[in-house]
Length: 360
Ligand SMILES: Nc1ncnc2c1ncn2[C@@H]1O[C@H](COP(=O)(O)OP(=O)(O)OP(=O)(O)O)[C@@H](O)[C@H]1O
Ligand SMILES: [Mg+2]
Image 1 (cartoon, rainbow, N blue to C red):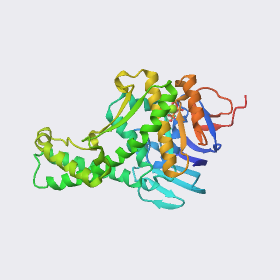
Image 2 (spheres, rainbow, N blue to C red):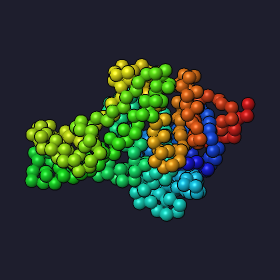
Image 3 (cartoon, rainbow, N blue to C red):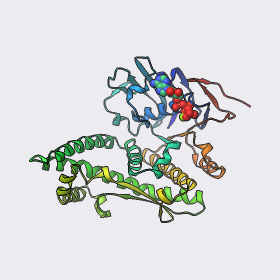
Image 4 (tube, rainbow, N blue to C red):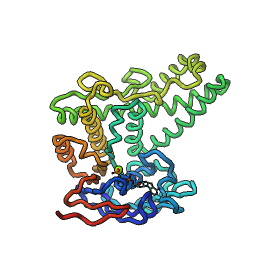
C-alpha cells in the first residue's frame, strides 16, 4: 500500500494542505506544535475511520470551521483508490466514501488501507496496565477484520447493559444478557488469541535480534487456560457461560461483570520476568518496537501488501543500533517519519503548511 496524495482542508491546524509522499522513506521535520502528528493522524484515520488520540470526532475539525475534510489517493490491490472522510463541528456523524461510494460503518474500511503507527506513547503498551495492551490488540485486529470492530462496539454496549442490571440486583432477563455477552465475548477472545499467537514468533525474533539474544515472550491471558478452546468458538462460548454462572454471586455483590475480554491481558515477559515491572527503559522500548514490527508483518501477510508505516518522533528516542535496526526492517514499505531535528531531504512542517525539501 502506498499513499500517493493526501489533501486536508480545515483539518486540525491545517487550513488546506496537500502532501505528496515518495514511495519509500519520507521525513517531515518541524518544531513542536506545527502539525506533524496531525498529518500522521490523518493518514491513520483514512485507513480506520477513527483516531489513535483521545477526543471526539468534532475535535478534528479546525477550530471555528463547520467541517474538516480528508481525501487520500492511494494504491492498494494493484489499483488506484480513494478514501474521503468528512468530520462535522456540529457533532453530526462523520461521512466516509471509498472510491466515491458511501461507507456506512468505519469497519467497512478495514483491510483496504493499512497503517502501523509507532509513537512515543506506545511505551505505555509495556509500562501501563492491561487496557493499553487490549487497545493494541483491538486496533491491530480491527483494521484487518471488518467484523471485529463492530463486535467490540456491540460487546461494550451489552457489557454496560449487563453491569446496569447487576447493579440493580439482576433479574429475569439476566440469562439473555449472559448469552449475548458470551456470544460476542467468545468471538473477541478467539480473535485476540489467534492474533497473539501470530505475534509470538516475529516479536520474539525482533526483540532477540535487537537486544543480542534476550527472550521476549508474548502470551494472551483470558478467562481460562484451555488453549484448545481458544480455537473452538462453540467450546469457548460454553466455557464463557460456565464461568459466568460460577461468578454470578460475586458479580451481583460487585455490581459489575467479572468475566470476559474486558479483563484480558497480553502478558509480556523479558527473560522470564514481567517487562512492565522489571524491564529497563531500553528493554521496554525494544519490546514495543518488536511488537510494532511484528504488527507490520501480520498486516502484510493478511492483506498481501506492506502497510504504510508511520513513525511519530520515535527515531530520536532510539539509540543508534535500534535506529539502524528499524531502517533495516523498513524493507519495501512506505514510511512517513516525523522529527523535530532538521533533516536533509525532509519536507518542513510549519504552522500547518508543508514547505519544500531541504537539500542541504
Ligand atoms: N481542531 C483543531 N483546530 C485547530 N488547531 C488544532 C486542532 N487540533 C489540534 N490543533 C493544534 O495543532 C497543533 C499541532 O499539533 P501536532 O500534535 O500535530 O504538533 P506536532 O508538530 O506533532 O508537535 P510535537 O513536536 O510537539 O509533537 C497544536 O498546536 C494543536 O493545538
Ligand atoms: Mg507530535
